[in-house]
Image 1 (cartoon, helix red, strand yellow):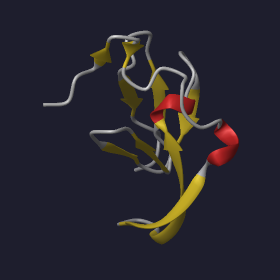
Image 2 (cartoon, helix red, strand yellow):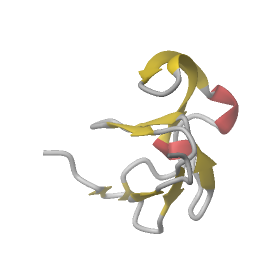
Image 3 (cartoon, one colour):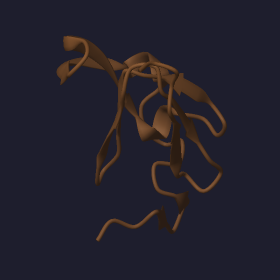
Amino acid sequence: RCPLRDSAGPLGAERHAAPSSVSRRDVYFPRLGLVSTPVRPLSTISEDENIEGPVLVESACTTVVVPDGNICRRGGSGSLSISPGQNP
């Protein structure tokens, strides 16, 4: 099980690395091929921040792949929502 909250609030609440710690990883996307993709720790994404893909969002229990052209947004509960882009 991976809890969405711990005793300090939403999992990944701003207690880890700063956004400047964004790393990169080679990821294969069907339309794009191999892409050097930013990796953002969930803890560095502020509430209601929009992040355009391609990007990986990592937490202690999962990695979320945000495809090219899609928009990822973190809600107040710590959850992520991904809106499809306009790419075919």
